[in-house]
Image (tube, rainbow, N blue to C red; front, side, top):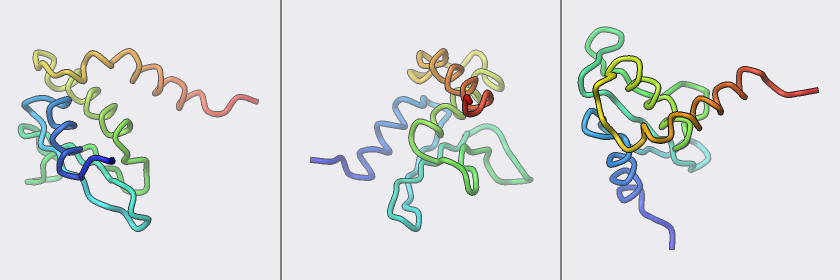
Length: 102
C-alpha cells in the first residue's frame, strides 16, 4: 500500500523540522511535487522562501537536499532530522556539479 499525499507531507514535515511548512502537489504527469517553505525567510517580497524550482527536479530527495542546505546556511542553530543526511546531500550536489563522466 502506498502512502497518501497527506501522510507523505506529514512525514516530510517531521524530517524537515519546526521551521518548515511542507506541501505536496501533483505535476502534469501526476508525479508528486514537494514544496518545503521556510516559516522565517522571505523571497521576492512577501513570498516565503521555498525549495520549489520551476522546471527542475522537485521530488522528495531534491527538495529535502535544498531544504537541508537552506537550514545550514540561513539557520545554523536549527535542529531537524534531515540534517543528519547533510553529507549525502553534499555528495549528490558534488556529483551533479561534476556532470556526466565520459
